[in-house]
Length: 262
Image (cartoon, rainbow, N blue to C red; front, side, top):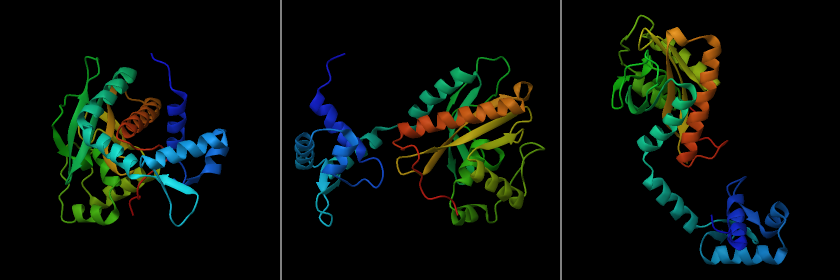
């Protein structure tokens, strides 16, 4: 590994400060936060502004915000991301940790489409495949994604819809589904017990993009022979960890969320 260049490191330290708070800082703010010499900070701020990575705020003299060049770099990074490929990599990591089947899925109308799947090594495991489509209300990923929709959009999708059953445990009453979705919003985790497969239970967590919007969900599926309440809690935490890791890959900042469903 080559030697790090101190001046470049300091410049990036300054840029990363703008990811916090309201994203507006003055030279004294930077000096106080990083403990750098006053002259160094002023030189770096001037250089970053000259290259359009920062820009002075006209109505707030002495304060800066991220400039158009930073936006262009972020946009180019977002353009090159492949949700399926990134999802598969994270799903692989999670599957290796728990040795259960991990899925990443997206919502289309009232169905989910699985875009990534990594199997467990157990003989008894869930039979599914990337590209498969299932009714959202019967799956943990689907319920997670439905729960993340703004209320008007959820209403539009559910109005007049027929909730078909996949198993005896599937939710088919819209009112019951809405109650379940409200609980998912409060907990931030979705669980389904034998609702899409009579022998399997699943937990799922939301995946967010750089704007904080939920764009996918990550689930862990477990045959009932290996399912317990303790196991459910462990897997819920692991699913949340995996979903957060995938969210970070998509540019999401931890602690930053988009508008909640209302």
